[in-house]
Each structure stands twice: as structure tokens, then as C-alpha cells.
Image (cartoon, rainbow, N blue to C red; front, side, top):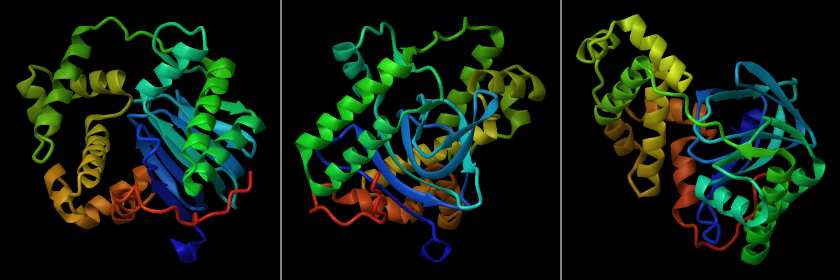
Length: 288
């Protein structure tokens, strides 16, 4: 990535155990449709990011934040020729719920209402969290993170909508998802899966897209990368993780992992393996 002018660092700080951290500059990078188990709070420093979310393209420029709730399908790409530069924090749902209960009047499961928020001060807070993590300043990192999440929830928070009443199609989709999770390394074809569930291929495809926002094969790739991340965090090598989740080889994992996470699996594992290590210089300066 260095020769292309694109750089990224995806890491964790031991004192923020429920938060993933990212700094990146992307120019030609394209994120395929995917989801996150955590919230996405991406603070744009320069350029423009475009991401498809909720049925339309959203544009986040300098001084604004891209905000995505857990398990929400979205994409990502540059909105201008020079690309975009940003820092992001990915807090776990439980942490966000804890902060919301303590500092807001939100009831129910908290989340973000709008996917883009123009708020330079919140952008600055996110970058300050990343700088504090780089400096090994646990008190500052934790404090600034909680202040940032509180501000975003107060400006743009609301209870996440309840799941729709389950229909027969939704039930079929849920069973299909369970089969794919169980047989991730050797999944059935769409026709065979539909037959096992007493459905037709196109009826299953429609039901699955309605329930999860993407077709089964796209969901499976996303789920494989999620499981690969957990294996890498546990110390499994990228080559072994690739086979375990059903990719044909490590290059296959590398390609899909980078298109969803933003960095190759080897770089991801190296940055996160020793979260107790001494702070290191970030790849990008980020003077927000």
C-alpha cells in the first residue's frame, strides 16, 4: 500500500478492550458490502468518503462523521480523486449501551439515527482518542472516548428499531443463516440449501436479502471474515484461519479480508497481537 499512497493501521489498545481503532488514508480503496459487530464512528480529516447505507449513497466530508450501527450492511469508497483520510473507533454495543444509560435519557437499545453527522468537535474528539492510545495515556483515551460517544448519542442518538415481526420468510432466512454458520467451511449451493429448508432458490434469496440486507453468498463472505478475525486475534496464522473458515487459501482470505477490514490479515494480526507493547508512531499524523 505504501507505493500507492494508501496507508492503514488497525489495532487495539489494552486499556480500551472493547474498542477497535483505525487510522487510514485511502484513494482507490473500495469496501464491499459488509457489516460490523461493533459501532462504526469514523471521523473524516480530509477528502470525502461515500458509503451506501440504508438504500442510498451517503457522503461524509472533512469535519463530519460516518456513523454505522452494528450489523448494518454498508460499503465504502472515495468520493473525490484524492480519496479520504480518517480515524475511526469501533466501540462494542455493550459499551455504547453502558455510556447511553449513564449519560443520556435514551431508552431501549441505543444507536445512531443518521449515518452522517457534521460536527468538527466530535471529529477532533475521535482523533484525540487515537492520539491518547498512541501515547499510552489510558485515562485520556477512556475519558475522551466516553465524551465523544455521549456527544454523538445526544446529537444523533435514538433507540434502534425493534426487529420486524417474524414472517415465514424471515424464519426460513434465519434457518438458512444458521446452516451457513454451521457449515461455513463447506456450504451447500443455493438450490440445495433451499431444498433442505423446504423453499425454492429465489424465495430463499428474497427472504434472506429482506432479513439481512445482502444475498447469502455475500453474507457468508462477511461471516467468514468475522470468524477469521476472531481466529487471528486468538493467534491462529492467516493460512490456518483461511482454511478454517472455508477460503481456498490465504490469498483468497487476503483479498476478501482487505476489502472488508481495510488491511491484510497479516498486518491486522501483527498490530493487535501485542496490545501491551510500548506505544509506536502512527502511520499517519492526523492533526485534526
